Length: 248
Length: 125
Image (cartoon, rainbow over all chains, first blue to last red; front, side, top):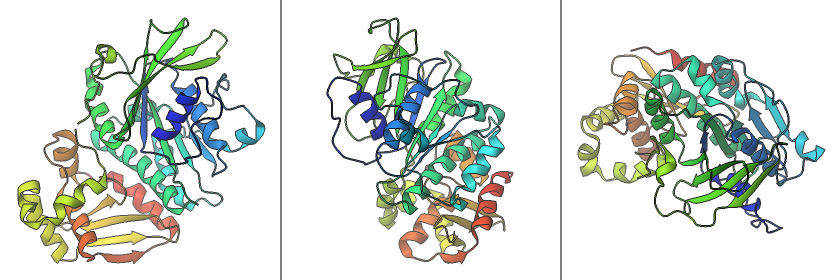
């Protein structure tokens, strides 16, 4: 769901009213980064953004309840928005699969955004290639079904996956996942950015529009601020790490 | 790396003389599956859909409608692991039957569709 994430990242900078009223969801997006790189915070910010759009509810799937609600997001933590975010906590891969396979049985308003945090935990249970592909494919299929039967605008999909430094065993799995998710956003530590704990978010929108980068900074109290990077990239930078998954 | 956007593959499928060049031996086998009416589009009252293909061995494989996934071993091996094929013959047969409107149709309940999606994962080689 590249467009929602792009709106979250773009509007983190100065200008007030945001990007206009486009509610196009964009392609499914994979959010990648190491531990503590802000994936959950960005997922939650996307949830708040979508919850304020006046369309369907947001489904937030994660293994464990969030310890605290991330702060400093552009969209306010209004009760009405929070009510539209439905948290589910599938405790195992099997339960997650059951949830996705039965998603069409649910009654009530059709979700406008499907979020999954911690894909790596579910994949760790069942690390085979076909299992990973099936989970990714089912996530896409569930979002596609919601898009089909929902009121309009489609249902977006953002999935967060924790990556580890230098673990080549996961390279095949990551390459496989990248084939299912046309858009990706990488979060990497950046010592050059503002603030002590600063990350660079590189958004590859999967063919729609140029690559773009922002700095995401976290203060010690958890407050998150987002600013665009002063120079936008023309080539993949060297700090992208081993598995940058070059786009064709 | 090739992405799994379904739209990207309608182009080559429609240009028949290029089928064998692009898809190799899968093309002939896929056409055979279409001829034998082996593809069924399963839908439920919810509107969700999935495909099932009766393979030449008599086994039934499940293919998702919205993105590239097939439960057959060839998909896992050639497409996902070795990356030397774009599609297995079952997926190619699904797309051919869409283009030529030759799918069988089957309606099931929402619960039955859930079971079909859940159990297809357990196909072994």
